Every structure is written in structure tokens, then in C-alpha cells.
Image (cartoon, rainbow, N blue to C red; front, side, top):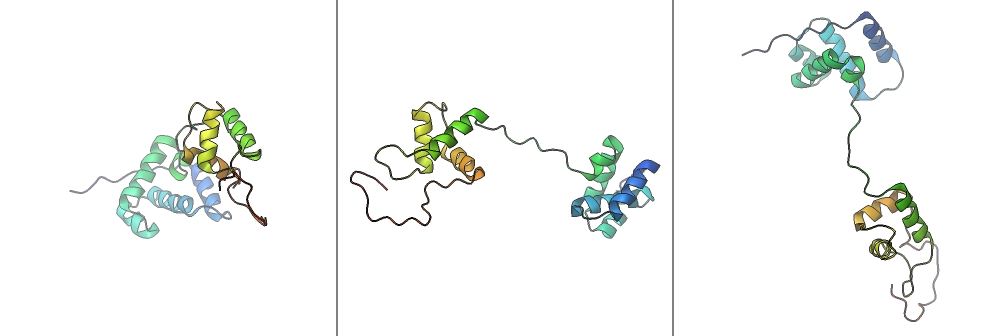
Length: 163
């Protein structure tokens, strides 16, 4: 059973934009392949024929054609913005945790650890609850590594200080 031909009519304005895009400088490979596929579809080629030309699957070529028909050129060439998960922490909470990490660790500790940051943030009521992974990603995004001591020579440890 063969699929019916996708008739993609690309407007003159969109054809001009496609040509400019293909002749322009640096673009993502995905965008270029989609533009080439759309251009070939507009010439009346079938999805399998276009797929062989641009090295995509016929299903991907059909999707490009359908996205153009539904949403226009931008929809066909570019990915829509991903939804992603909501941030677990508000900006003010993030700032308070970063400020806490930039201060001295609590008594009895030589340095902050991810686990200690998570525990102290809840204990100090900066956040109702927070996981270690959330704290790790927050610290990583600010390029903070409080558990690491670079270029520091220590003679010994103070009494009662855990490492």
C-alpha cells in the first residue's frame, strides 16, 4: 500500500527565504537538511525520493511537509521551544542558597558539601525542601565548587572539624 503524494506549495516569499537560508553562512545542519527537503518537496518529488537525496527518513520528510502546511516556514525548519520541567526553586531561594554557600560552613565542618548545603538550606528555612541533585545543579550553574580546595596548603585540621 503506497502513501499518497504530499503536495507542498511553497509560497514565493518562502522560496526566497529558503534560498537565502541555503546560501547564507553558518546554520545548524538540521535546519539546512529540512530546508533542502522542503525545497525538493515543493518541486513535486515524493517523500522517499527526497529522503534519498537529503539522507533523512521518508517519515521525517513527510513530517517536514506537514509542519510547513500547518504552521509555515518557521514551523517546518526550526524546533519549537521545549516545555521542560519547571524550576524547583524560585530565584530568591536560589540567591539565598548561593549566599549561604559563599559564607563559612557551619561549626564543625571544614567546607560545604552538596549534602550539607541541602540540609542547611532546609534547617535555616531558606526552602521548605530541596534535594541534593537540585543543589548540585544550582552550584554547577554558578560554577561554585565549595567542597574543592584549590591551591590551598593546610598544615593540619582544627580539633572537632570533620572533613
